[in-house]
Image (cartoon, rainbow, N blue to C red):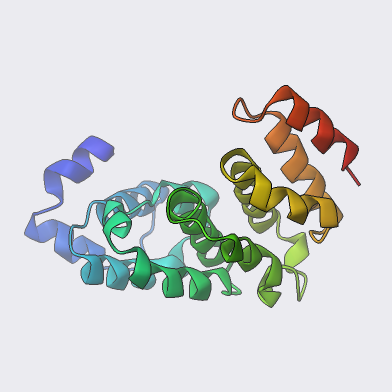
Length: 193
């Protein structure tokens, strides 16, 4: 599908396909996500992303969508990430958190970004804490944050502000990481709920 997406991305058929929603098949949604990921124009990419997100209905389609153009537009992207992360739609929320993890845990990191998965009410309100795919994304986000920004992130884990399942899953995923030192892994073990 990746190869096919590269071959057709500039074709008129591709443009028609991107504006024909919803699709009937899983592979069509995967192709759609890959075509969005290959968009070069930021504004067009955002428009296509926002049109498609309501139709994303599984983690694989959500997680394969990773627009490269976002890397060059971080200032414009952050408000979108905050809005997506507040969405009551599972995979829009997951996508927002994944974009936060992918683009803002390295050189563009600010400690305030760690509050996005913690303080936005839709994440844990209204039964959202029961949503496995959001909880897993939050755990993945914080495990990655521990690997990349330990000093800023460990306080979140020490304060135990995440729901117990998400908290413990974060620790599990961090302890499975090769980027976390053995000493850090042992310390994390003591923080389990």
